Amino acid sequence: MMNSVLKVENLSISFGGLKAVDDLSFEIGDKMIYGLIGPNGAGKTTVFNCITKFYTPNSGKVTFKTNTGEQINLLEHSVHQIINYGLARTFQNVELINDLSIIDNLLIGAHSQYKTSALQQAFLTPRARREEKEHRGRAMDILNQLGLADKANEIAGSQPYGVLKNVELARTLMSRPKLIIIDEPAAGLNETETEALAEMIKKIRDYYHCAVLMVEHDMGLVMSTCERICAINFGKKLAEGTPDEIKQNKEVQEAYLGKDDDDAEN
Amino acid sequence: MSILNKKQIQYIIFGVIAVLLPILTQAKGSTITLLASIGITAIATLGFNVLLGFSGQISLGHGAFMGLGAYISAYFVSQMELPFFLSLALAAIIPFLVGFILGLIALRLEGHYLAIATLGFAVVIEEIFAELSEFTGGWSGTKTTYPIIFGHKFDKLSVYILIIIILVILMILTYNFMKSATGRALVAMKKSEHAAQAMGVSLFKYKLLAFSISTMYAGIAGSLYIHFFRFAEPKLWGITLSLDLLAAAVIGGLGTIGGAVVGVAFLKVLPTVLQMLPVFGDFDGLAFVLTGVAIVVFVMFYPRGLINIPNDLYHKFFKRKRAENEEVKA
Image (cartoon, rainbow over all chains, first blue to last red; front, side):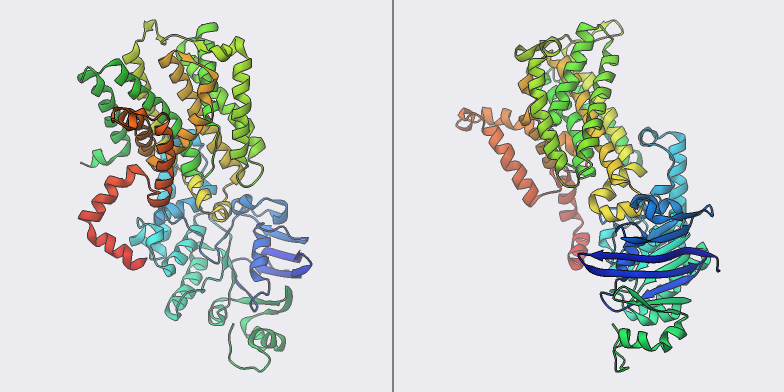
């Protein structure tokens, strides 16, 4: 039994008779970079949305080891509570607040960390000021670490897509997460950007000591960053193992790469 | 210069100018009435902007909350003989609680139910104002006096100054609030409910907070209204007032503090200007029609609102480079 941060057991959800996720189980170890792969429509993002409670699954259990080491079933909590336990996510299409500066976007990520009340904040009490300053400092540290410090005061909407993806990653770190869930980080990025992203994900894990779960199409990124991979198709698990094991797996090759072993990705 | 860039300082300067203007020009009583009316409505619009401009919710019954504040304040001052500031506080707290309860019911549902619920609330409460004659004076209205504060009896000008002071305090508090974690949560919620939820923002809680705060502002505005005009009747607080608040927030500039003041000033000065024109002055209700036109024009062509016009013009003519950069990106 490994020391796992997230354990998904027998997760199932269906939409109007269609089983999007079917009896799926997998487990992510502490500080592990874990990949969830599968062809289009395999149900990857649905799994994400179930774990983060954007969808409520029909059955199953999602056990998460919180910041305090407690084991909780995420399915018993509401969507806005998930981040409090140390699980932060990004979105496939980047959900940042375009009118706000990048640093303000990061501060939204720290929302769960604020302790002062709205009233204290309106009256700028010393505690509220101190707290704001502390989180601003943390946001600058994170931007520095990810090489985004020079863009801190730029308006998010004016930045290129690649930068926004990184900002969204930086935003998750503000909540002091134990596990970051990343939805298709390489979508819309070119090859150089994808390579930089792989480095960044590893760096985030090493520096912030958190596990990473990513859903990804780009096999290059998955194979070079993930320590373990779970391949699914039609909501069912095909195989789980190290990148090499997954590469060798016949079923995965058939489902994911097509029957005739040709090189077609996606 | 840097101190002048601080918004809080700008609001105080605005307040000082607003107070000095009628004193130095020895303005007529009607001018002070107009200015006071702008100040009062601006307070309610400021609250409305917290709701619509920052959190993206809409209410069609804020006029009713203003009425509630007005009657509560008049009742406590005239009938119960409570001090003015205590009545003002009650006129803020009770609408806040009523808004909280109404929000508890209406905000459970997704979509535009808040607009429908507040509209219903406004219709019902107008009847209640009319029927509850012991409290409100019924259709014939209720009277009260200028406030007496610490034994000092206020007159028209000093009530006006009080209104501006309260407006400026609320502008500063609203600004601080909007720049805080709570304010950012509201903005996040308006722009992306998914992102807000994933960051730990409870949509229900923050919608409720924004709505309750905005009803509190309406209550304060109502209290100041009745102590300036010293008279109120049920039909004042109907849909026309609620829509005026909506119009002022949109025309002034959604999600801005100064926009609330500018938008209200535009709406209040417009009819006065129209009356002075030869032909247009004879049309009754022309201002009302033009308000509607103005909303449409601003929503369609200039959603950033009046408050942003100087800034945008400045960037257009003096910072061409930036504009060009933006075009490239677009």
